[in-house]
Image (tube, rainbow, N blue to C red; front, top):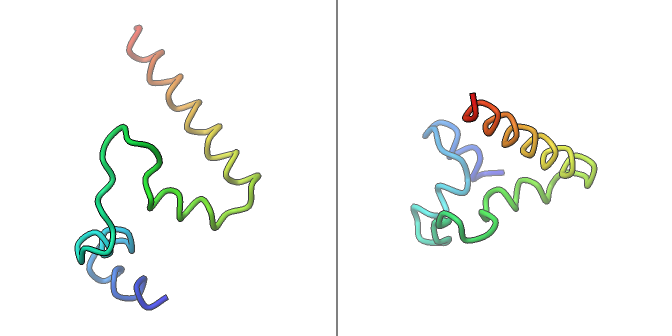
Amino acid sequence: SILRKVAGPLGLDEHHLFVATGYMSPAKEGEGLDPYVAGMLSQEPVNVQRAVVAILTILKILKEIGKSK
């Protein structure tokens, strides 16, 4: 998309450009799903979405294991 072509050289992604120009509000911590994440995941098949959630779960478990050592 055109937005990707503009965002890339600026070192940004589309979501950050939308936020910077006021078309989207920035995601607030702990307030649900980030619009950028939702948009990216919605472009993927369900099995990939579930794999991403599984990987996130594994990373959270590993983080907790690391804290307990």
